[in-house]
Structure formats: structure tokens, C-alpha cells
Length: 363
Length: 104
Ligand SMILES: Cc1cc2nc3c(=O)[nH]c(=O)nc-3n(C[C@H](O)[C@H](O)[C@H](O)COP(=O)(O)OP(=O)(O)OC[C@H]3O[C@@H](n4cnc5c(N)ncnc54)[C@H](O)[C@@H]3O)c2cc1C
Figure 1 (cartoon, protein in one colour):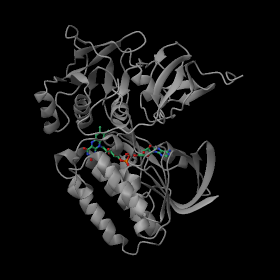
Figure 2 (spheres, rainbow over the protein chains, first blue to last red):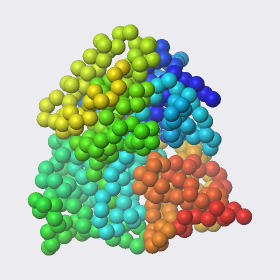
Figure 3 (cartoon, each protein chain N blue to C red):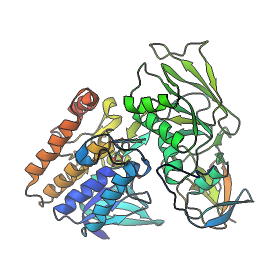
Figure 4 (cartoon, each protein chain N blue to C red):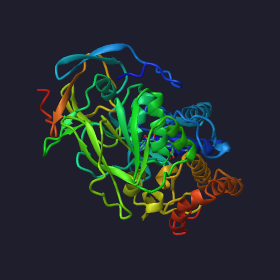
């Protein structure tokens, strides 16, 4: 059996930051990730990040991933297993990991779960046709593997992800027919929306997909207007000749591992779905298990790094290896509060107010 | 369908290799996901669903959703969005749940 003081599942910004914080305290750490390169969502983000400067805002996502991975390499206390999937975690503190087709038992004294988020799907006739792709899939295909997802794309969702992916598609030489958004307002930042408008991509608010058409794959999409009750308005249909319908309609935390462990969960729409109840130190109702990043509630890259660092220090403190924990904690919390301040953080604050609870352990 | 020029990214690729899709030879780059090589060749329908025989492609492209299961070298239920391409691979569309005896 492989033994480590701390196991971290997920090498996105949250997991990497947790591993770095813990190793800084002298904790032996194993980080496992099912992808082939560290960075999670960051490896496909070619744009310069928004968020907080201390967490690398203004730097392209792909470069943030390299920065964090570089730090990790220089840290002798961290071992990193790529292409390794955590399958389950059991009462005797054993994490089961699939690696190169074999199951490995890993015994750990503490665990950080930083499994990120998964894309939501949407209901409409033809939504299962090849060519209906998640925004993350479109990014992976074009920004990681250099393959165009199609010739002409309809984007669904005008949040930051929908807007950014639209722009990335244009950079890759793919046409964007339109962006449709169910809400009356564009959810993403005005800078991103303006870039698209300057490139004459229409953004249709109060519109959604009515149907996807095609035999073996998407050939056409029907879009229609929706009223205040989100019901389609007959007679307002518009047809788009597109071969890809790209869904950017939100993310849900990936929490299967946390559920399997038996951590107490709660459904919090503001955070994207089921999330674990935890205390202010990211400690769940299972005392040696901590959570970080999008898995604890969908936010963004900067907060993933900060909650990751917080969870890493908290896990180290739990293991008796972070004497300066109160100061480090306060520092992370101050930065998180600043990030979540203001109107854009209101949703997250509302969500957190119902899951951050002393019901979870105290460390 | 390959991106030839990109303002920000450069793509490092493995060696060009031949593989087979439904018995027909195709080319791709070693180490890229099988699904990327197929997509670059214009192939997006990867299997047919068990009950209604509907065409299916990938959805998440990171190995989570199981929408892209194909039969690779006789082994069914391979997630081709993460399985790496190697020279000479025999890749076939999967019908339904796949048959574990296909390699016999
Ligand atoms: C298009 C787009 C644009 C964005 N733009 C910005 C931006 O400008 N600024 C910003 O701050 N944020 C942005 N974000 C959000 C940011 O990328 C995410 O919030 C952040 O990556 C979340 O980090 P994470 O570490 O929690 O999860 P992830 O980055 O998703 O990493 C989770 C990792 O865990 C792995 N994993 C999951 N389950 C297992 C398992 N069982 N075993 C092993 N490994 C597992 C996954 O493969 C993945 O590598 C954007 C996101 C997208 C999609």
C-alpha cells in the first residue's frame, strides 16, 4: 500500500494550490488527477484571466497552469500522478486510485477533494445529436488538440464562458452564427460582449434553442424568443445553418467522491447544485476530508486557488503541521472576502451562508 | 478541420500515423485522443444508442460523460475522447452496449 500524509484529488488550480500550501508546511502530499497535464480547466483557457491580481489575474489560463505546475515540480514533498482516477475513499482512510489500468490503494491521514465542476446539459429535441457539445469540450478540442469543432457554431449562453468561447472560436478560424441567451441580460462581462459585437456576432437575449435538426449530426438549429415565463413564443423562430451547438449553460460541482465518502451534502442552487457542508476551514462533516475549488461551489479560478490554499493549510493544521494556521487562514479569508465582495459576489455569498456551518468538524 | 494558424497557441503533435475507422485507413497524430483524430477527419458519429439507435458523438471531451464509447481493437466501451491514438488501431462505431466477445 502507498502511504502519504495528504492525498489531493484533482490538479486544477484548487488542488495544485492545496498541495503547494500543505507541502510548504512540510506535509508529504500525493496529488492525483485523471488528466494528462496538470491545470484542470486552466489548460484550455487562452484568454487573460479576470479575478484577483495576487491569483494571477491578467495572465492567460494556460500560463497560470504552467506556473502552478512549475512550483509543484520544485516542491520535493509533492508526488504527482497524472492519468490517475480516484475511484473511492473508505473508512480505513484508503483512497482507491486507478492508474495504468490497475487499482492502487493509497493510505492517507487527510484528504482534499478538488474535483472541479462538470458542464450542464439542456433539454430540447435533437439535443443528443453529434455536434451538440459542451463549451469545455469545444475548448478542449480546439485549444488543446488543435482541431476545429466545426465550421459554424451556435453558442447557447451569454455568461463569461459562452462569450469567451465564442471569441476563442473566432481566433481558431471558426464562424460563430450567434449567441443566444435565455435571460433578458447578458450575464458575462461587457468587455467580452463588446469584442463579439465589434466582430458582428449577434447576441440574442430572451432567446433559446427550440430544436436541433440533422440526420447523423447537427445540420441546423431553430432558435426562438421566450417570454418572461421562459416559454417559447410561436412565430418568432429563426433558423441557423450550423454544424455545432455549443452549450455554455452553467456548471455543476463534481461531488460523486464526496457523496460516496458520506460527507453531508446540501442542494444549493447559488453554488451550482449539491455541495458538501463544511466549516470555515473547508473541512467537511468527515473530519479528515477537506474540499476546495469548484467542487465546493462553482466560482472561478482565483477563488479556486484561494479555497485550495485554505484547504491545504487547514489539512496541514489538522495533521499538526501548521503552527501559524490562524494567520494563514485569516490571510486567505481576507482575499476571498475581497473577491466575493460587491454585487457580482452576491449569489456566492448567499449560497455560502447556508453551507458553511459549524456542523462540520472543527480543526 | 485542423487549426493551421492560431494567434496565441502552437500545437505540438506526435508522429503522423495510420489507423482504421470501420476498416478504412485514416491518418492522425500519435498520442492525440482518438476522438480528435476522427473529428479532424470529419467523423463525429461515434456510436449508436442502445434503445433507439440514435447517433451519438462526444459531449464533455474529458472522459466524464461516456457519450463517446467505441470499440477499439476489439474492446468495447472505450472512451475515445481520452484514449490516445496509436499506429494501426482498429476503431469501430459501437452499437448499443457493446459485446465483450467481439475480439473472439
Ligand atoms: C471557458 C471558461 C473560462 C473561464 N474563465 C475564467 C476567468 O477568466 N477567470 C477565472 O477566475 N476563472 C475562469 N474560469 C473558471 C475556472 O477555470 C474554474 O473555476 C477553475 O478551473 C476551478 O478550479 P478547480 O481546481 O476547482 O477545478 P478544475 O480546474 O475543474 O480541476 C479539477 C480537476 O480534477 C480532476 N478530477 C476530477 N475528478 C477526479 C477524480 N475522481 N480523480 C482524479 N482526478 C479528478 C479533473 O480532471 C480536473 O483536472 C473559466 C472557466 C471556463 C470553462
